[in-house]
Structures are given as structure tokens and as C-alpha cells.
Length: 308
Image (cartoon, rainbow, N blue to C red):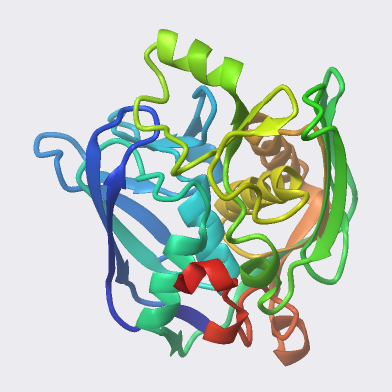
């Protein structure tokens, strides 16, 4: 069965790039509604924006979706990852500004509060997108690929000259509560030099050591250090989970990312859906549903920091 929330979950925080305070509320929705954003601060234009791959528009450093009136919401990747990781298929997200709040830089604040609200099963089957043959996109040394698989798997590798990051590789099966346990608390990261450059360009006005892991010549500047020794690659996988959620349903596929970012993952979805024989919609029986993200997730799956 499809899922929604039992009750609404509200979040208030700063937009990473705008620095403005934003209020966001995730509301329950009926079966087959999907995931939609609604700009509550917009009066004279269409306020609803679909959380879908073909609504993504170019944006620096984050994922942004827009409707045909040009009304947009940016930095949606963390909340989309939280929804996908909890197996929430239907929700209306009210937001009173153009950017989702960054909170602590991970998805765990979204996950913990929505999990506390509870999940409501709906009397309609889940329709998954089963990948039938491999599709791949490249951009220089970066690559993203989808291969056939019976469940969502994410295989990611990154390489940075910063010695505190270096080369990191991780592969995880996203079935059941794996996203919540393994990825949800991994924060966005950057170099101190990147912070200086972004602020000089008018970006990252809401960024701080409270919502990002900042590296500087082998040092971790963020108080408390890393939540995982390989937190950067885990955060890249979190981002990929959120960007893949824009497919419009759970993916049954293995995603491989090599230095991939938001734009490349969206290009990959566009190529998948432009290749008619590369996928099929699969009405999930109980055996398939048991392998989907979020099935069987419990509050005990939350990382310790989520309840701190």
C-alpha cells in the first residue's frame, strides 16, 4: 500500500543560500496524489509545484523545481530524501518562501519529526519504476548510471584533494530502514575556501558550522567533528536519494555515482524516461514492497544524534 503521514509536520529554519527564515509544513495527502510543494507566499501565480524530474530547472549547488509560471522551490534534496527513505508516497508541502530550510544540513530533522507523526497506509498499491536496461550519463570525470536490480541500491564514490576527505567509496542497499540508519544524519559539506567564495558571490548566507561540515587543509572546523568517518560520501548518497525520488515513484535499480551531483542525476532520470524500453511501471506485490525504502522503519532506526 501507498503511505502518507498521519498528521502534519512543521519545520522552521534558515534557507542555506538566502539566509531567510522559512516555515515548511508537510501535510498528509490522498493516494496517488504524489509529492507537491505549495508556495503559501504566492498569491497571483500558480502556487503548486510538482516534485518531479521534469520540473527541475538549472540551479547552482542544489536541486530546484519550478512550475510553468516560474514559481520555484530550491534545496529540496534533503526533504525529498527523507520522504523517500521513509516510504512516504503522498504529501503536500506548504512553504512560505523559495528555499527549503537547511536545518542541521542533513535529512535527520525531517526524518525524526515525520516518523514521530506516524505513517498512514492508504488502500492503493505502490507503483515502482523498474529499470530494465542500463542507462548512463557522463560529464568529464563524473558519471551516473542506473542498472537493473530488484531493489534500490546506491553505489557512490568521491575524490577530493582535501586530505580530510580524499577518496571515499560506499555501496548500500536502501531497503527497509537503511536510509534512516545509515545516511539520514550525514550533513552537507564544503571547504572553507568554498564558503568564502560562495559568500563573496551572495550565496550561503544561512550557512554556518551548525548546518555544514567545513574542511580546511586537513582539519574539520565543525564542532564535534564528523558523525561518520566517511560522512562526505554518505551525504552524496543522501543527495542522490533525494534527487532519485523525483522519478515519481520508488526505483527498482542500482544507482552508481562517480563524482556525480544534482544536475547529473537529473540528466540520468531524463535519459531513463526518454528511453522507452529501459523501464516499466511495476505494481508492487508483497515480495517487492518488502524491499522498498521505509518498509518496516522504526524510531529505533534513528541515529543517536537524531534524538539528542
